[in-house]
Image (cartoon, rainbow, N blue to C red; front, top):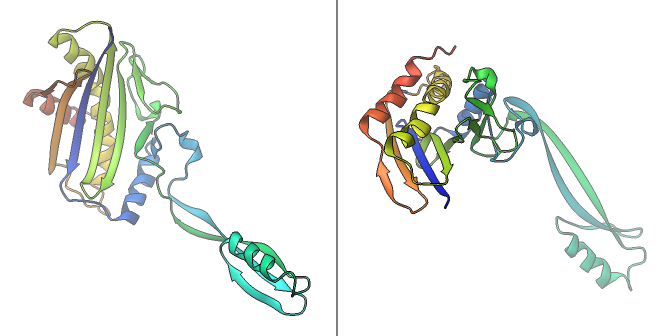
Length: 246
């Protein structure tokens, strides 16, 4: 029998949702600290970060004839084809042509997801954790625990979310669960928090990183749930203060 234990910790920063352009700037700042906000299975290198040149494409179809010149323009090929078919018998040489316009401009890159790919260059514990592969965007530990990190910014506010899963063959004792899902990942959670909040409290963002709400709970495949004890929550928040991140 396979049992999957899951622990989720959401840290909500109570200054509310960050304005979209500022959030894109935050994502760019995080990339300078080797934390890349991207899709769940994206390779982070396929994403753009920071103030970059963005290309946008627009296409339209123009119906013309030698005698009448431009007859109509539409963004739908089907509409252009319908006009050509309808008037082909009475307008000689009527045709439709596609035109593609490429517009380039500089702007702050939009994140393509909420998962965070984290390079070991951030200073994670190389012995117990490593980046399994960019395509899965999680940290894998020697005991089989996996930790994913997400950054969400929506109507619910700005959140840093950790999700730790541990797949085992038998029911585990409480102390073993906490060892695998709390103690094993604690240092890395602290390092990630410190890096994230180090950017968040910059003057241009101005968030109060002490003004947070924390939701932490454990789940198992049977959908039973137990709340994290206050001492676990305190340990996680205290872990970041042990990290020095510029």
